[in-house]
Length: 257
Image (cartoon, rainbow, N blue to C red; front, side, top):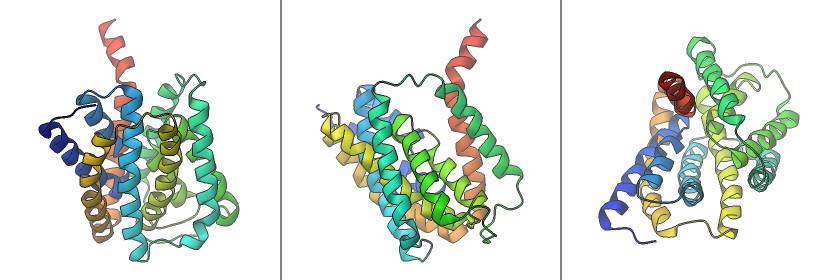
């Protein structure tokens, strides 16, 4: 596929903004996927190429959080493998699965996440007592959300962050750091499936990767600097935006009727 210089520069800028926001609170797909569609990529190719650039941005963000001590990588070894397996299985399942019901269920869950983060006084950087044993249930969470990411995707980061905070008692910034690790793994699994199918548009993905590297690094540094005071409102805004976007076809249909 041929893309002119303007399109490539546009994708690089979109990649930067997507990675910057994603490194702080998730939701980079809100920017990356529409940007790819806007330059003429077919939906499957846009989804596949978005996974390519997302892998880079989330990996850079995860590395940045890890280097600053917000991630215990040893504790995530089993969740990493389960997340990878779940996402790969989800990508395979998506080929034959009717996901229409998810377009209604996921927005409801995202609205619930945003409301919870908005009103919960516990959404801080302070660690709390875990409600479930991390070693047992974090791998289950990884497989579950990894599978969902492979099948559908929107809101995966928000669900991971909410899980790390509410189930395992992690402070908000540490929860985001751990989420970036599992997000990167989930994106990689789905990406391998798309590469096998020949769906990735490499020139478009390469342009976005240029922006993703800088955006992922600066976003992670910004998230660590401002902590929960910035992460919490961004999660609320991004989760609500994703919910409204997913519900928009139904909303317009009701208004038109």
